[in-house]
Amino acid sequence: MTGLNKGLRKIEVALKWDPSPTGEPPHDLDIVAGTYRAADPYGEPAYLVHFDSRSPDGTINLNRDSRTGQGLGVDESMTLELERLSSEYSRVVVGIVIQRSSGRKAFGDVPNTSVRILNGYTELIKSDFTGVSEATAATVAVFTRDDSGEWGMQSAFRGFDTDPEDFGRLMGQDYS
Image 1: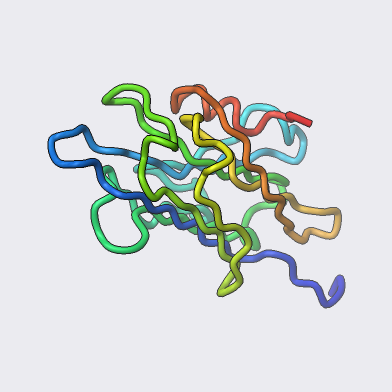
Image 2: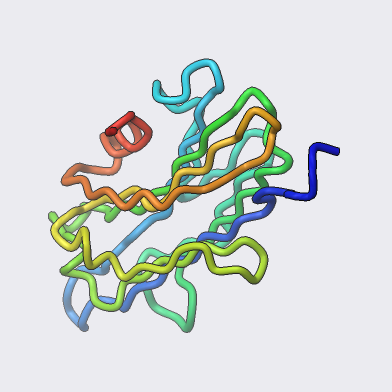
């Protein structure tokens, strides 16, 4: 036993937004998680988890995927089982990206957008994207494993004006 601190274990990312007005193209937002190897924590992601995918080992799963924002409550949900993630990985970056099938939309163009990150019943982050309202994608949190193997989190709201493909490459870079 390394101490009484268990660190972060099982995380839920919940995203919601309002649907487009009738007759307009739908708003389609996606949760994206990039996993990075301990040997290269700021390089290319080892893999990305996003719509229609899950991690190869089943530790990161997109549980709910909406393409319209219609419905009650959470529109998209992702679970990260950090305690099960191989020690080969030391960093996971979570972000949100807006699909561009109907042209460029920024977070400020999508009404009532919000993200919550929970560790069990404890809310770690809650945001309405106000600080990145002109962006089309944003990182929201970075999870890192320390030398003892425990996971911690940093809020990491950073906006990007990019498409989903480029966001997958850019989201984990070192911007300090």
